[in-house]
Length: 178
Image 1 (cartoon, rainbow, N blue to C red):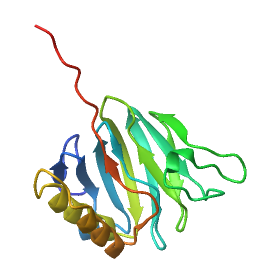
Image 2 (cartoon, helix red, strand yellow; image 1 turned 180 degrees about the vertical axis):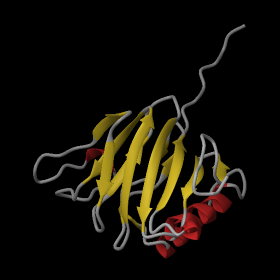
Image 3 (cartoon, one colour; image 1 turned 90 degrees about the vertical axis):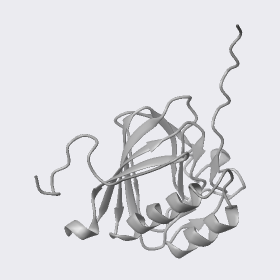
């Protein structure tokens, strides 16, 4: 089978504690956009950020995410408190929801549930986000803790203008009694 058709689970996969990314369409295949299937673990928060050049599209396949895509009246340290001049706030978005993000639009998503969320993610132009995922997977896999400065430097090279911090705070498993 050609690499233009991907059956469930097929595609190059990058797995770390903070994300699972499967490459579905890439620049190497001739695509002008990079398309990924992403599993977002409980507790993952991209932090508020924007891109000067890239546009993005997110479609939730399974689960629920908190989404934001607007310029807030005031950029504070916590994007979950942001509000637009039109009164827009963070949206709890179930499966079937989507978010389109034009260039220069602050946006973020967070999995505040206790279950993984599966989404389809498209970034244009290709292959910048492909390279981003490859490099962030290396950083996330480098040890027990993540060097926030390494993440900041890497994100700045890939048109990610961070406004609030990226976080990964998995829920604590409930203690079992015997």
